[in-house]
Length: 266
Length: 275
Image (cartoon, rainbow over all chains, first blue to last red; front, side, top):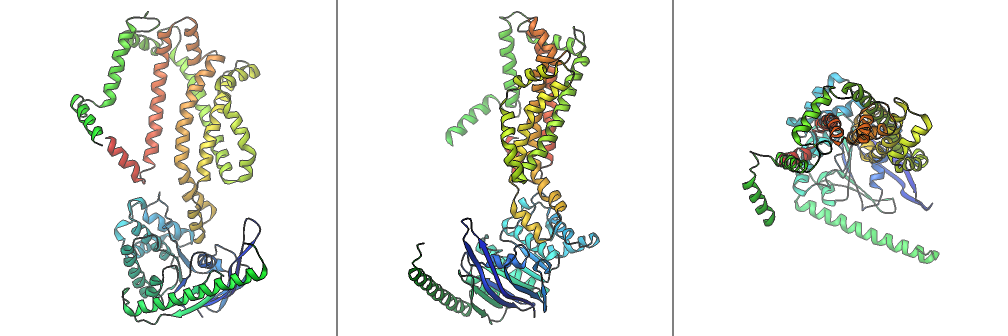
């Protein structure tokens, strides 16, 4: 059950009128309560897929289902964490959270307790009245995560949330994220371009290529808690990278063959 | 870096900051120069400091030819009306231009065209079109000169709203009203404040210009009279209280602005350096 994406296709129209297929007949299942990563090189459509699930983009074909029922993605119970914190710098941390809660219609009487709760979860209990610009990058990102949690979504969508941070901060946040996930049991869909991050964090990894198709789906069965420098993980990473490069080479040969065959000048 | 610090040290020895802040020294120097220059001039043309103070007191207590309140009153009303209308029209137009392309396309040229006319030209045309009026011409001239500046400032502000934040709000299904209240308006605030300070500074100077050319009362009218009777000392004496008042208002606006940006650490840091 969980989250099912069936035959999803999304085409973008470019400025010169050309059509560019970003997602080509994508089908995948995300088990409820699992941590699933979507991986791929730049331009492969992973952010687009996430944005479709968030209700930010429309799509041209296919359907999305949650717990067995087809839904309009704008109605999915999601919380979104962006790559940048995207906080309202002129509002305190608490006000940033209440902004989201009010927008989602959560009763004001509950706000105080929820704010305390989620800020403790991300380790920022003392920063309720602080303004974002006085926080470090990692802390601001935590506020972004707290905000997504504050609306109590069943699905957490995360778009490369740690890629702007330094490795030390990112490692800390990854561990905190796993703790949080294990405590709350939410379904997490996590986009990244970093294979070691994906392997460390996920139960499942879905690989997208630049042709907009899923070319690989892998389960990571290494038991938790995982050590990011664990040999087994590194071995898996290495294998996955090999698979990825092999596939990209094959893809390039295909495109090259198609263009010489069709005589298209690019 | 070295040269910079040794100059600072030298200055610090001559003028210790804590005893005499630099701005006080500069003003004192200016006053000394003024007094020296005034010695070579007729007191009606370039009054010494003592004479100037006396004259200002006479003016403010309506001891001279013109009653102070009778002329400062209308001037202030013209400034207030001109400022208010310019800010209202300019902000609305600027926001519309920043958010809606069709508005921008059609209004950019007219706004720029109006902006290039000097205040004096508007003053002359206003008088020829409407005759000598109490408020219409003066307020109109202020509005025509000041509104384009407000418009352009606010336009640039409205254009620069971070789409990232709008997108973020969309993921939480925030309504347009919530987006306005929490994203657009706070984002526009610095631009509105900057526009207000500029608009105010322009408004009062334009008011005086308009009054010089087409009024029967007001500070500008009085200045024009004293120009014709060759009394530079009285021109200065009338201008000074108005300048001080306007300076006070500008400082107030600045203070309001600073207060509303306490969330920005950079402002605090630069204030610390200056202190």
